[in-house]
Length: 225
Ligand SMILES: [Zn+2]
Image 1 (tube, rainbow, N blue to C red):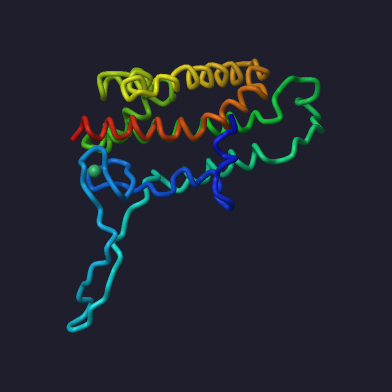
Image 2 (cartoon, rainbow, N blue to C red):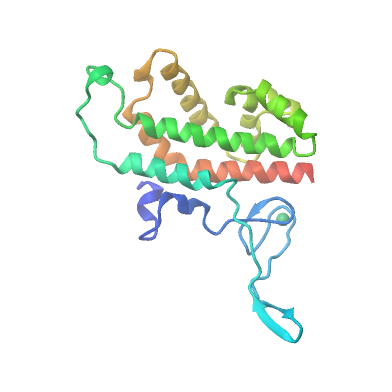
């Protein structure tokens, strides 16, 4: 089966995974047509408002993008660039005579992007906590592993992997567990743990992982609501 990015409309970058998704008033990430959490509709009909005495203008309702921050777009485009750039094959210095993948950076970028979205989830659960307490907790549980597991359990009573199973995305658990384990091996003295195969798996799973995370995000918004 062809990977998802080969059927993107022409001119669409990988960051287009965020296209057409907006933040609902209830906090969920939704398509404009329907919100699966609150069932609310967003009208795309222009509204007429009086901008000055006797002066009326038709305004399109504004919708907030669903991405957490500008970096969410950036990471997807960086991953795309790293995947598409020609292989250098001119490894020198430390990279000589190693089996480190030419695409190792794809995996590292993906993992940083993933860490950012796990932080967004735990921040969602801590949104009503005083800021100083929130920041202190996040500093204490600084690693993504502890945030997906212990901190997640403290906030939501379960783990991120269990949430993936709960929303029907159990297939993501093995994939993410493997990336996490290999990335840990990489940073603890076994650089060959990240190979070409893992990089290829990451780009193939990127879209499904993106939507699985959104399912969990909405599942949490619903539970908090
Ligand atoms: Zn909603």
